[in-house]
Image 1: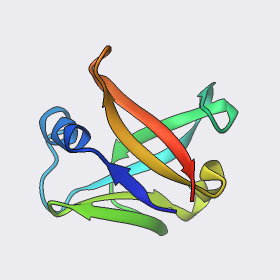
Image 2: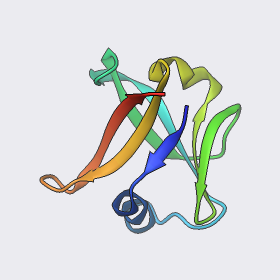
Image 3: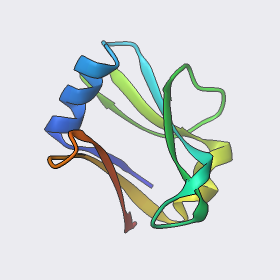
Image 4: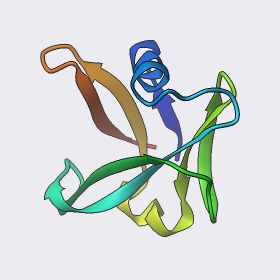
Length: 97
């Protein structure tokens, strides 16, 4: 599994979540909502240090990662994070790895 971020998404994290080199952003399975992969679960994110890091992508010194306990959510897919220009919010997409 790989984590891909667009330049616009990276900029969003820097501006909206005030991330800087050395910070960790966790993507996790959140109970509630829905996603393209699982009904009843959606993508969550938070700024916190990892417990059991499974996958990460380090960009500008910021660690974007998924914990071992959330690998099931991605079901063999890579995570693509971009900006939705119509809502000015992050968008998440999944492609078979």
